[in-house]
Image: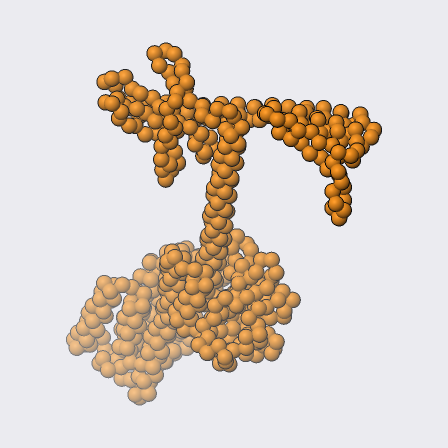
Length: 579
């Protein structure tokens, strides 16, 4: 039982596709040859006892010799070929089959021939030639042709010398025609079986080439710096032109809403198409939405119900809807339509599936790039806003610092604060203030030459506001270098910080003093119980607190004339001189 099953099925799987196809074809031919050989052996065993009728193969032509020998050769050789194929020895099986057909043709001509070479038995030599042509390489084919030529020449020599004399044939030309047709059918069977495998292999190679071309085109689109819209449109046109389809549409899935939006369409005249399905909601019965939901390809034919053919174009007969995803998440659907009823076989679906995978990767990459570019633009806008706000804050700080220092200097009796160090002694200086010019990058130190000496002038800057200047005169013969300039700049920064702190401290003390005076005045005023006394005390207290030349307080309605200030409803206090 196990042996019979091994004969009826090719058990070995070959890694090479070409070898696998050739092994299947050779296995089928070996089974047919085995069946014919067993039939011929059975016929010879049944009727071979009649000495007057010794059939050769199936044609029952009386000849000399043993007509069962070619049948045994075909049967035994076919069994060995099947065994070798199941063991994975394809090369040995091919050589054995070609050799078996050659030996069979040689024995058939020797044992089933006539006194000349005009019978159909000679056509049997075409079988090993055809077998060598479809199974062996050029060198093996040439070798078999040479062996066949040598066999025919040898057979002609044998017949010419009379080494084998065949009895007169009792059958007419019809028998020879049947022989010839039989061997031609056998040759045609070999060609048909192996050529069909070659055609399927060629079609597979064509599909593979188209798939590789499509992947290469999509890769070039991805690396070509295209936007998402440009890439999708060019990808749809490439798929249509590469595979010769009628219409290609690409839908993208919106993550938040789940709506499928038509992003690319190769329709030449969009007025011919119904544009109401350009946005497909999640609850729509469309096959595009169904493919996106289940994550599998759907093939729709013209025999499908009308609701499943909603996306059909006017000339469409077959539709293939393939979802494309990235990292297991569907991000779009590829809708391909053809005018052929038998379009989209397994090989086409496999190739288009590979293209959809690449399309999903390209779509995700470009989407990520768009999001990154958008985030970069937002970041640049935010940075620009921060810079603008920083400049505004710096300008306001500068203005506030300038006003604060201006008010502080005006409150001082001595409007100029200037000191100099001379011979180890610090003395007040009457040198007028000469500020350096402000450059494009702010206040910067500069070096001048006065009376042959170098003078380093360093601005004292606090929060962008120049408060003063420091001047350093170099000893004779000495030059200020970069390190000296940087040190002077650092000293000026520390001095500006200390000056600003002292100003704030003095202003804080002044504010505390004003608060104390205000509290004292409030205490004095709250001790009075009459208006006249309160106003009189207020005039005197305010005069002392503010140090004014005169102080007036008036009470009354604006509509009435002002009352006499010498009466009890007013008070007046005047002082001459400064307080």
